[in-house]
Length: 233
Image (cartoon, rainbow, N blue to C red):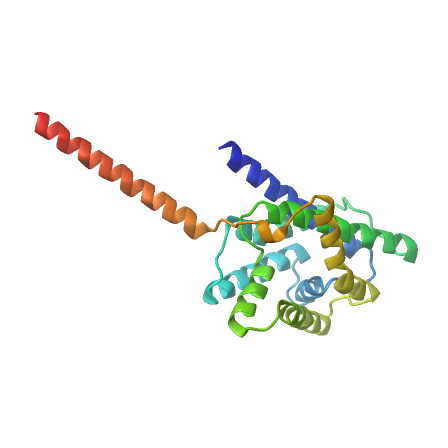
C-alpha cells in the first residue's frame, strides 16, 4: 500500500507540474507549443477552456491508441483527465502571471520548459504508462517502422498546422519550444540521474489479470475448504 501511495503521489506531482509548465509557456505570450496551438484552435471553434480541449483530445487519442494496439496505464488515463483540469484551475483563477514584454516573457517560457522537464521525470518515473500523445507516437512508430523523430515531428507539425488554421497562437515561442523542450527534458533527467529506458511501465490489463487470478485462487481455496468440511462431516 505504501508503494502504491508513493507511486501515485509521484505521478500526480508530475501531472500538476506539467500543467504549471504548460500554463507558464502559454502566459509568456510568445506563441504556443504545437499541441497547445491545436488545443487553443479547438477552443476557438467550440468555445470551451483550453484545459477541456486538452482532455477531449486526450480521450480521442486514447481510443485511437487502443485500436492501434497500444497498452494503456493508469498514468495514461490520469494524464488525459488531470493535466487539463489542473490547467483550468491555474488559468481560471489567474494563479500564474501573464507577461507581455519580451524579456520577462522569454524568462517565463524558459522556466516553463524547465518545469515541464522536471514534471516529465516525476510522471514517467512513476511507471504507470505514457500519456495519450506519447502513446500515439509509440503506436505509429511500431505500425509504420519509421523513426521516432520522424513520427513525432509529423504528429506535432500536423497538430500545429490544424491548430493554426483554427486560430491557435503561433509565434517565436512555438519555434523555441519545438526545438528546446527536448533539451530541457534531457537536462532534468540528468539532474535526477534518471534513465528513462530503465523504467518498466505497469499497464491496466496487467492489474486486471492480477485481480482476476487472485479471485480465481480465492474461489479455488474456498471450494477446497468447503470440500474438506464436507468430508469431515
